[in-house]
Amino acid sequence: MAGFLTEPELVALGLSLRVALVAVLCSLPIAFLSALVLARCQFRGKTLVDGLIHLPLVLPPVALGYLLLISLGTRAPLGAFLLQNFGIRFVFSWTGAALASAILTFPFQVRAIRLSLEAQDRGLAEAAETLGAGPFDRVMSLYLPLAVPGILAGAVTAFAACLGEFGAIITFVSNIPGETQTIPLAIYAAIQSPGGEAAAARLAALSILLALAGLVFADIVARRARAALGQ
Amino acid sequence: MSAGISLRHRLGAFELDVAFKFGDEPGVTALFGPSGAGKSTVINAIAGLLKPQFGRIVLNGETLLDTERGVSVAARARRLGVVFQDTRLFPHLDVESNLLYGWRRALVKTEPSRIAAVTTLLGLEGLLRRRPRTLSGGERSRVALGRALLMNPRALLLDEPLAALDSALKAEILPYLERLVRETKIPMLYVSHSLDEVARLADRMIVIDKGRVAAEGSVFELTARLDLIAGHELLPGAVLEAKIAGHDEAHGLTELELAGELLVVPRIARPKDDIVRIRIDAQDVMLALVRPDGVSANNILPVLITAIKEEGANADVQLALNDARLVARITRRSLERLALKEGARVFAVIKSVTVGGREHS
Image (tube, rainbow over all chains, first blue to last red; front, side, top):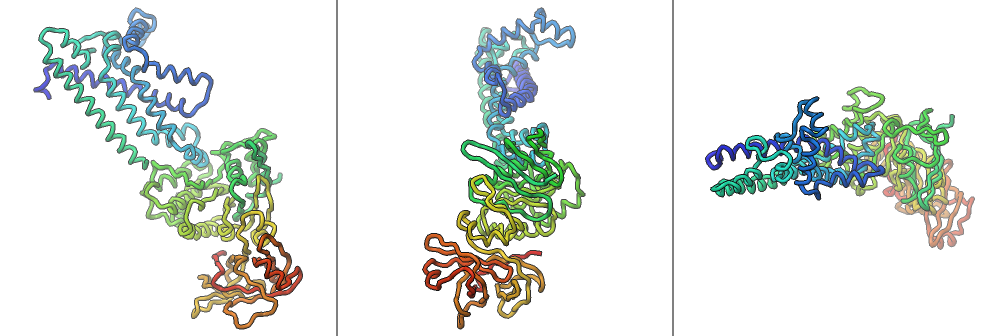
C-alpha cells in the first residue's frame, strides 16, 4: 500500500480513518440512548424529536457545515466559550471534521439500533421484570446485548458514510492537509491542481476499496453477532 | 386480613371478575378453564405485569395490590416466579446465566448450594453451557422452571407451561413437575386447560369460565362433578387417591386399595402403603346391573348412582364407591335400557389397562 500511495495520500487515509472512528465511537452511546427513548418511550413531542434526529439525512451537508461554522467558530459565543473554558476548538481542526461527520451519520446509527430494539420480544422484558430486574438493569442486561447486531450494523454503516463526508467538512474546517484533509477532500484538491489526475485516480480507487471492505465487514459482523445471540 | 386474590378488569367486551384463595399453604392450585376464560389475565395481574382496574392481592399476609388504597407493588418486588408458556428464556445467555438471572437479583437471598439442588432436581447438569436456541422444547421448559425457582419466589405462577409441548414432551416434563411439587413447599398456581395435568399435579382447583369463577374446591370433588364436565370441555373422569396394597410382579400389575375396595391397575413403581393418585376416564367405566361373570375386566366395584346428567347421545353417571367418586359415560340408550336411576346400586366395570397412575407422596 505504501508503494502505491504517496506520503500525503497516506496521511489523508490515516486522517479519514481517525475522523470516522472518533465520530462513530463518540456518537454511538448517544445514538443508543436516542434509539432506546424512541423505541421504548411514549411522550408528547416524540415526532418532533424523531424529526430532529433524522434532519441531517435531508439537510444539505454544506448548510450543516455553515451552521457549525457560525455557531462554533472562535468568535461565535458557543465556540468562544468552549475555547476559553475547555480549550476545545473545532474549527480548522480534525475534531471539527469528526463532529460534522458524527452529526451527519447519526441518523444511520439511531435507525439501525431502533429497529433492533423494536424487534426484541417484549415478553423477555416482562420475564426480566418478574425476575427482579429494574428499568436500568433491563437496559444493561437485556436491551443492550440483544441490540448488539443493530448497534454494529449502525456503527459500520455510519463509519463507511463518514469516510465519504465532504461538504460539511470543507465548509466547517476547511481543506488543510494533515489536519482536516480527508480522502474526499484530498481527491478534490488533487483535481484542482495541475497534473493531479493520477493522484485523484489512486485516491478514488482507495475510496472504492474502503467502501467495499466496509460492506463486507458489516455483513460478516452482523451475521456473527446474530449467531452469537441465537437469532 | 383476608388472604387471597380478587380482581376486576374490563378489556373491551371482556370482563374479568374473580375472587379466590391462593398462596396460604403449599400445594398446587389449578386455574382451569377453556381458552379465553381469562386465566392468563389473572396470572399477569398477580405477577404485576397487568394492572387491573380493581383488585386486591394478599399473599402470605403481604398486600401486593390494593387499588382502593392505592397500593401496587412493582412486578420486580413481588417475588413471584412466573413460568411463561413460551418460556421466555434470554437468547443471549447460556442456560446457567438464565438460571442465575433471578438468583442474582433475589430480594431474599438463598445459599449457592440451592443452585446445584435445583439443577439436579430438574436434570439440567449437562445443559449449563448451552444456549436456549440449541435446547429441545422440553429442556427449555425445565430451564424456565429452574430460573423461576432460583429467584426464591414466595409462590410460583405457571401459565400453561406444557401447552406448547407435544404429548411425548409433556410426559417427559410431568415427572419433573411432580418432583417439584413433592420437594418444594412453594404454593403454585397452575394455569391449564388439560385435565390430565391438573389431575396429576393439583390439589385444589378453580374453574374459570367467561371471566368468572365457576367452581372452587378439591380436585377429587370437582373432577367428579357432572355440571362442570358438560360446560368446560372437561374430558370427564374422576381423580382419586388410593393406597398401594401390593404388587403382582408376575403379571406386571399393582393392587390398589380404593375406598375399601381393591383395584387392579398397571404396575406403579412405588412401595406398598404409598398413596398414589390415579385418574379413571368416564368412558373407561362400564355399568352392570348384576355382578358380571366371565369378563376380562379385572375390576368390578359395587357402586351407588348419585347423579345422572344427560346430554346429546351421552349420559354421565356419577357413582359413589363409599366416600370416593367415579364418573361413567354411557349412551343415553343404555341408560334407558338398564333403567338406571339415582340411588340405584350397580356395578362399575373398569379394565385395568385404562387406569392412569401417578406417583404422589
